[in-house]
Length: 442
Image (cartoon, rainbow, N blue to C red):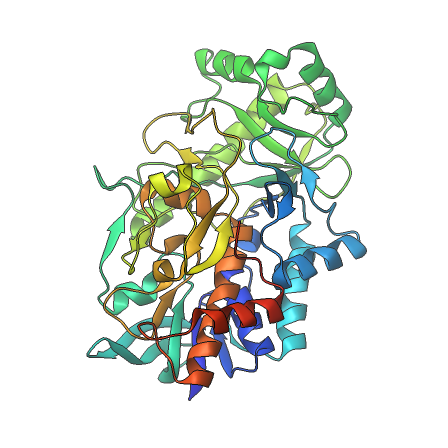
């Protein structure tokens, strides 16, 4: 029997596994895909946003150690001021370099990993998850553990265990649109900078932008013109891209795949086809309308749709919009969120954000990762206990890193001291955080 089994090897699951192993636990990490890394790797979700808020690194831990190593091997530019002024800092990384680091750390720490292994059922008795049933490449079998962590992103393990959940926003169950980011090379970034300087009103920029690193949220006029000409047909109001680690290379995050059920395989398939069509349309638009893209070419398209939102698992506490806006702190804080409440409208072409706020730091309580009605089931990543609005702030990679690492410390304390989610010593958890160099207070 394992001390803990983590379902899902995305950012949150990986950090949970590494943290648990570092603290001496017997860990199994299972992943339905044939590669670890989740949306970072499969969906090309970069740059990472944001390790920083209030002028300090609020994430820390093993994730920060990884970032430092990526910089040392020239696979990342490190933490840079966000050129858009949307969040405090962003961290451009090469996705292939990040993938290699993920595999390297899992091997270095000695984590047991099963790829191409999908959880298909769970066995629950009186609110206690005793085992899960998984389907591998050629067999179906059961796995037992003392604790289980649902890091699937969609809350799949919680769903299979009959936990309560909410899909998308309460009013209509609509979710944020998904996206298909893609990497483009041969971009003349000097031309892009010249366009920004020529008409700053056509872009979202930080007040003290220095033009050293290129990030673009804008070309609003060009998008409007393309729509009028019938050259851009999907529901998007701007061009969004960021400079990559390699010269003259950017990641485009402009597609908008809305109105699909991302929890239904047929609908997900249709959405994927739609995403690929949008990439083609988007690239033609960039070549025709945006200076600097005349000689550009597509380097890589994603292997999987980048999903922002599906299930919100009901936990002992549900983080709310008010918690985010009021910079809420908690006596049982386990992690910090650093990112704006970035809601891509489910049925409009723009963003729904509070534009008069510069400080987005708030704390995530232990209760928001404990699945309600269970004594040994945690949820990590974007499907933790949070409303549609609050989830838009904490769904990003660095925050998911921190949530996963925090859960490893919690389980370590519970197992070593025979404690549980209703009877524990928070100070002991804080001691484990210090061992991991984990930041959890704003």
